Length: 468
Image 1 (spheres, rainbow, N blue to C red):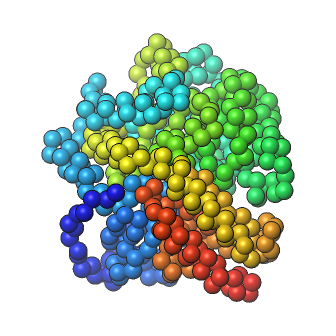
Image 2: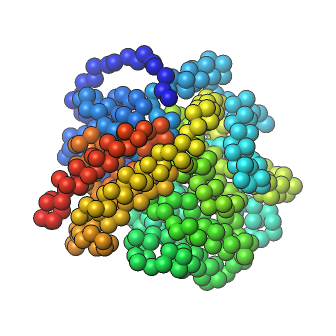
Image 3: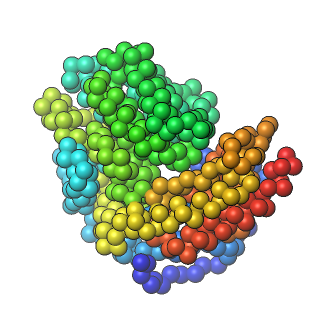
């Protein structure tokens, strides 16, 4: 668990910080008019374990692990020490000039070890700074690979509606969120979107295997529709995170893999959220026993302590680059950043030493599932689902159904989220659901508290929602 540390306690001028926030700072994915109406951002100043504290002294249980990422919890002084020591020795150098530094070399070997435990074909790693950059790298690498293979027409990526794969042009295009596509004239050409495996919303009451077959078949139908000879890859998160914690039926991923192999297209797993223990395995795809050709990873790779992401690449793709590729003219200033890599390596060692993956799979994950299920007795809850330490609560107008509050679809989640924050819990509202993704160090007592606050906030929200 977290080691005791001595940290400075600063007296922040909250009013001045909010003034400067409005005057100069553009927060990510924000409504800037609403930001002004609220008087600026909530200023988070401290964190320890699973708790964050704002500049006014209010503490909240962090049910989102930051932004799906702080897997080992806050306040890990060993990660701060590793960063400090690496900065003193070699804070930065690039990987452009036929050079490397020790941390990315060692980290690549460690990641390969985790990937190859279930898929020996995944041998190599390319480093970036964010999940969006990882998916951009995949986009370019896949198209380059097929060109080198003498099949340059294979350019089309198949993704899913309501998928999220980042905020860059390529990442937002690969994603299937229409509200993102409306800004910037997206998606770019060469990306197709098919059904998502969202049974509660799009297959309510349907047999899970029949639903999985129907949704997987939509991929095959699109492959045939555009021509298999034109399709490069299928990309999907093992569990869709920002889409609303959409957990597919168990037979879905094996069916998807079989379709990819049938038509010779690459299978890409976006593990930016699901990787590094979230589902109780090092990588989410390992839960279903499938073998992707490429993996995007970020977030839990460093537990968010420093920005880093990576792409796991199969030996077939690497061998093609080696034999036919010449220069792969792609990369970033911070690809293989030594300090970020050193921290990520130490982060993985914490997870190993504290058995956080096994604990998530056998203790805290099952406990969260059990306690969340109690919420299904609430008159606003249509479903409470989880896998590992990621979960969602569907808010409905009639229990036992998937009926929303008519005329106000998409508003229930944010309303209940704001009440959760008032009551001391940070969660995320996505349309008419609440989603959670706590640090992997969370205790059973903290899980109880998380669910108790959800229940309290649902009670407070019910008269508000029924009055809309």
